[in-house]
Amino acid sequence: MKRIITIYLLVLISCSQHLIRNPNTIRISGSTTMQIFVTRWANEFAKSKQTVTVKVRGEGTANGIQALIAGKADICAASRPLRAQEAHLFAEKYNKIGMSTLVAKDALSVYIHPENPVQNLSLNQVRDIFNGSITNWSTLGGFDEPIMVLIRYSDSGTYLYFKEHVLKGESFTTSAIKINQTTEIMRIISENRNAIGLGGLAVGKNVEHCSINNVLPTIESVKNDTYPIIRYLYLYTIDKPQGNVKEFIDWILKDGQKIVEDEGYIPLW
Image 1 (cartoon, helix red, strand yellow):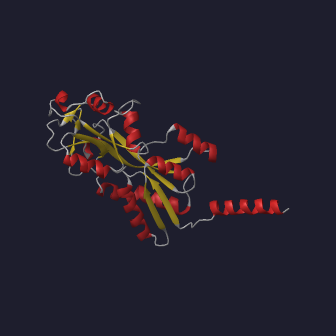
Image 2 (cartoon, one colour):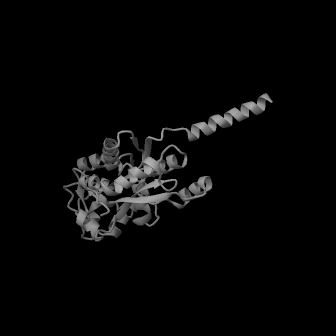
Image 3 (cartoon, rainbow, N blue to C red):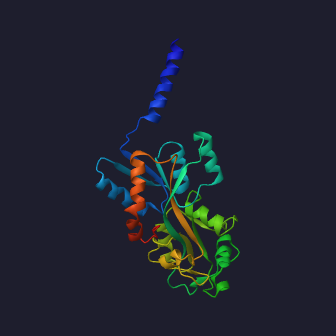
């Protein structure tokens, strides 16, 4: 009898830990690319509705999805669509595959040093640099120097989106240096003229944004779909948003689009 009571109490504790949380706190986890404007969304929404607190953690899209599935986040900010195995985990635990909301548009930029004479690359050349087929800038008419390839870790939405849509599933070169933050990629490139890396259009400071297929990544070229590496940015929830989460996402799709534009990303409308 004592053992049954103990098990029953453990079940109650487990359920209460899962169910009891402050409904006036919205927890967001995910994309570091989106963290700039997601944090501003959180601050501005909290000003307009002072009874609600919005907590933001930028730890990568993959980790944000895991946090959402585990019940440790109410919203995942994602710079790519769900992968098949992630949708499977949703279905396995919740009998649904989550709900996505498009919240912004972004170009995936190729960063180079401002002094690099190679200012334009074809999409095939970009692929060959990042898969290791091209290893020296002289092959492309640049300096006779080895190309220093910088990439994000595999939990980054930028990493996976580029691998799937540009490398077409091929592996990154084994000589690529993995960097945790886009800001660190920019810093390294600004100090090394033979470096190249990836990141969002809006966050590329102190580096040159390389033209791809003779098209610069600009707000205009993203809007008219002439730049070849364009992606949407998402918010994922387990189910159809309700309560404060719904109110927050509705606000993002209206008033929050101005913040998207202010931060150099492309709003939906």
